[in-house]
Picture (cartoon, one colour):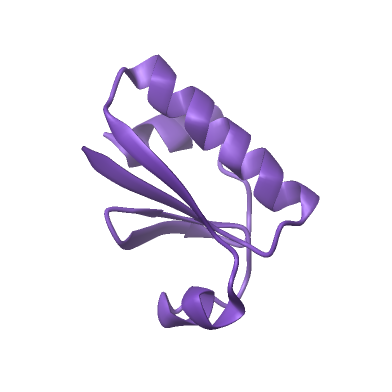
Amino acid sequence: MKKLQVLGTGCPKCKKLCEMVDAAAKEAGIEYELEKVTDISDIIEFGVMTTPALAVNGEVKVAGKLPTAGELQAMLK
């Protein structure tokens, strides 16, 4: 099971990334757990300075922008 974490304080882009990740993971048919990380100190522990960001199994894959659907699919594989 993959652990997917959306890092962000709850801004519209963070919410959009969460929706995109959920949809992409379902489409890919992977087993996953989706977690929203909203605490600033937790986000900084990932080394992320700009949100939204996505971490897959603890590894930050994108930060500061919304990935395209294709980029997101590649990150989840």
